[in-house]
Amino acid sequence: MSDPKPKLIETAAGDDFAETAARVFADSLRGIESPLVILPTGNTPLGMYRCLRTRYKDEPFWKNFRYLALDDYIGLPVGDERCFHSWVARELLDHVGVPAANRIVFGSVDDGAEGVKSCLAACGSADLAVLGLGENGHLGFNEPGSAFDSTVRAVDLAPGTVAANAAYWGGEDRVPRRAFTLGLRDIARSKRTILLVAGTRKAAILKATLEGPVSPEVPSTVLRTMNNVTIVADEGAMGR
Ligand code: PGA
Image 1 (cartoon, rainbow, N blue to C red):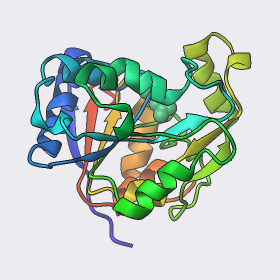
Image 2 (image 1 turned 120 degrees about the horizontal axis):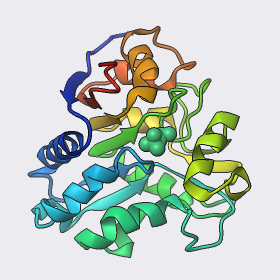
Image 3 (image 1 turned 135 degrees about the vertical axis):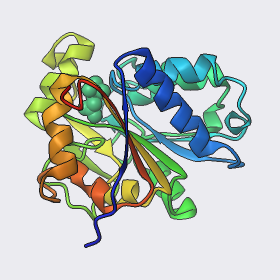
């Protein structure tokens, strides 16, 4: 297996991290007429989204921008604030004028992955995948043990992921136990990828991602099998 090296950009914490991530995002999309872009939820991208919806609001790439969901809970009522696509809408899409028709999202029912599957079948791959990093190395809801050739599917959330998600919603009983996710193969086919990593609590998993054995036990090591990967990491995540 080849081991291409991700490009690593180290930033200060806070604004520098957010601004650098937004700049790398915008630079990745300039000149692409109708970009298909995978976007994450979580705390890590919030500063980048804030920067994109203010400083980069008038970029031409928003005109025909297509959002492809990375993952989402199964079983929530339509429009529930906990749905990940509602989160991305609140933080970014509603502010930059991406119409509903250009948001390719998971439905909340068992056959809810059909729209995402047909988009990938038609497009082949995303132009850009933006990802956060779980403390256990998950990408989307590809938890440890996910095969590198996995595709779109429903999964059970790992207990640690349920606990981490409880922080957003005020208790574990508010966190669904099942979710849809793009597979690692779907993500790995993206033409470019940006991994965002911030804070000291991510330092160990970032080190494992960059230097540990490439293995499905640490799903984020799939990034080392991919080309055109940029990691934006703040000083805390770099262990400084
Ligand atoms: P976080 O989540 O950005 O809130 O740390 C990242 C993830 O679990 O994928």
